Length: 164
Image 1 (cartoon, rainbow, N blue to C red):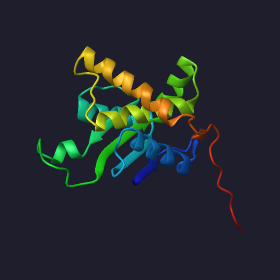
Image 2: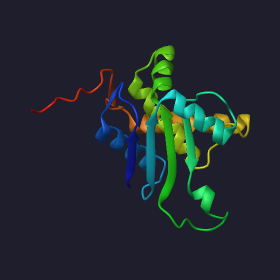
Image 3: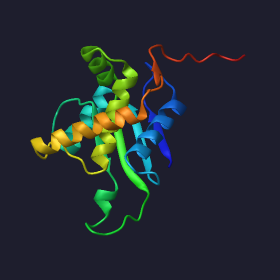
Image 4: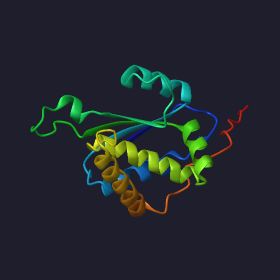
């Protein structure tokens, strides 16, 4: 179960090993124990561009999911890749949302990652109100399964020390 993490921000220090381990626990909780996952943490401007390009919505969003299997595997066929897909999270949006609802950034990031992974697994809250309830219920269950959520980021940027 490989997790590939890319962080394109300097405002926060991401504890990458903790984040990868959390992603692996989420994959286990949803039954994707042999799957690989790509996760990218980016800023609002970049996620807005991706949202505009792929979903035709010209606004920043919190999380986007790009399934690989769904894109390359005809329905009814077995997967030929272990790559489940890509989850892209806007860290600035996650920070704002966490503050708005009064929860930690760690829980917010875990929730967004779960949401993205469930999209990769075929859940889609935009399909119908019934599917939205089903997905929300599954999100809560997975969050319970992976709790407690570890510390994933700190607010201060990591400073590089010059070595003379």
